Structure formats: C-alpha cells, structure tokens
Length: 272
Image 1 (cartoon, rainbow, N blue to C red):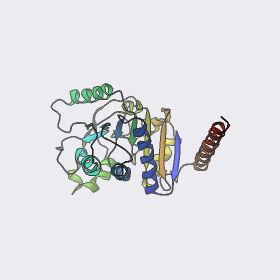
Image 2 (image 1 turned 90 degrees about the horizontal axis):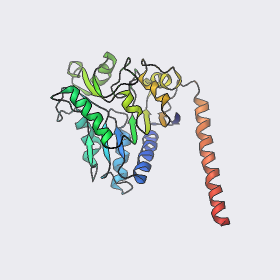
Image 3 (image 1 turned 135 degrees about the horizontal axis):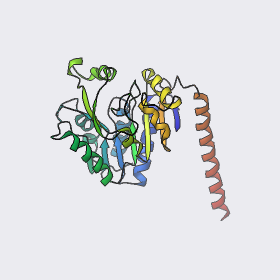
Image 4 (image 1 turned 60 degrees about the vertical axis):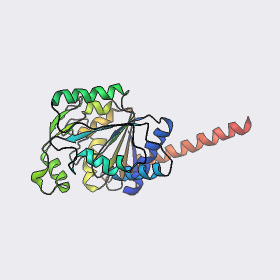
C-alpha cells in the first residue's frame, strides 16, 4: 500500500487526476470504477478541465459506479446517477462510451446485483477503482460488519452513515436507509485502487485502514491485502498515522529512485 500525503485537497485532486489520465492515455478503453460523495468532486473537476484542454479522451472508457441509494429515482437530485451527471458525465465534451450505476429501482433486486457483477466481468474487470472512505471505515456502502469477500448486494446503512449523508437532504428523515453496493470482494478485484481522504474527520478511519488489523469492523482495512493501492491523503486525514514520517520517506525514496533510473536511461541513450 502506497501512502501519498499532500498539503491540501487541491493537490490531492491533482495527483488523483494524474493517475487516471496516465492510465487513460495508455489505455483509452480503460474500465474505471467511480465513487460519489464530496471527496472525489475535485478529481472530477480536474478531469473535466483536462478533457476540455485535450489532454485526455474519455469517449472510449467504460465506467462502473460503486453504489446507489435504493428507492430514489434516477432524476432525484440526490441520486448518484444525478451526481455523476452533474459533476462529471454532463460536463465532458465527449462522454464515456458506457456508464453503469447500480439500479435504484430494480424489479428483481437479487437479479440486478448478479447482472451488475456480470457486466463488470464482461468488460474485463475494473482497471482502476476510485474510492472514498467513510468515518466508520466503509468503502462503497460496505458498512462495518460486511464480509471481506462480499459481492454486489443490497445493504442497510448504519446510523453514522445516514447522519453523514443528511447534509445533502432537506432533513435526516429524507435520507435513504438502504442502498445497493459493490462488495468488498468486488472492489478488491480491481487491478489498481486509489483511495482519497480529506479532512480531520476521516483521520481515525484512515489510521485503522492503514495501520490497524484487517477486520470487517473497518472494511477499508481489506485494502491491505491488495497489491496495488495508492492512498492519497491531505495533511488532516493523515494526521493520526503513527508511521507518517516513514511513509513520507518512502515517497521521497521513490522519487529519488525514479530520477536515478531516468538519468541512467539518458546516459545509455547518449552512449549508444
């Protein structure tokens, strides 16, 4: 697990966009896993800017969103379909080829979950999954107690998640109590994962996810088992990490090694 600590939210968003753009330049038909919530908005804003400047073409990509509230129609201003249209899809000059979001009003809930998993498989799996993290350590809507091998399924939201999401609704009573989400097992099958965390209120969850035991009580801790995870944290979100200085040293060493290798390549080219 690579820990990247940056000074602020803007820098976090820029570095996350760098990773997404690099992938899409190398693989224009990449399959992206997308997240909602306030944290990835800066990333999406940066992707829109770069797409409008011609740095990246999203039109061949396919996207799968992590989750959706159950019971909200797609046109509801707090549905995740509406969120994605507002912050990303509707702002791009050329939309991704296909955009999948779990259905909010499925006729057959179990079949809808099975079909979502099947669509991911049909597209060759997710190349890069973007994640946020909840105060209680949830990823997607996999709340504490979720099986680490779980698949796409309906879930009941915990009181703390409902409370956190209430700021987006007129009253707490309007917040949906149920959702459909990719499972932890589904998320772990992505070839690369980028988790974004900003703010002091995420610091405890981040510390448990990175340095705590792997446990269903902190679903994000399952990411310790994945071979290619980058956590991009602002100063506040990283503030409780016990080994923060070491993570910073690792990033500095990574930069130095990259510079050494680049200089060695240049010397080889000049010698030839």
